[in-house]
Length: 131
Image 1 (cartoon, rainbow, N blue to C red):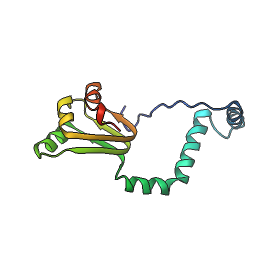
Image 2: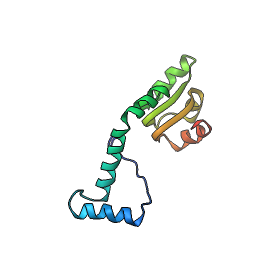
Image 3: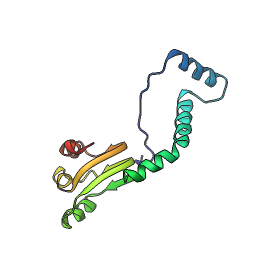
Image 4: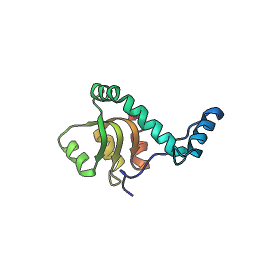
């Protein structure tokens, strides 16, 4: 399964009255199940707040979507004597063949709103740089 196809699991606590209302809508056929209701509610809220999201992404200079760093990408950055800040709204990934040393030499900050995927060793090496 590709990173694009994977979803992140979240857990929420819902009061019994709200949960009962959700279950009623499911039972009446408005939604296939609780998850369908929650996903629909999230998408509706995100659409309602789309303008605010766009302004914030621009102001904070975030990459919207997916940003992947391969070993070659980071070696190129290191060879140029540069560093990178990873700032993503969505999914940021660092390839499995990136060493903790290479990551430490090239990545100065990681600010991800969404999901960040990297090897355990790379995450440990960058722990103090993750916002």
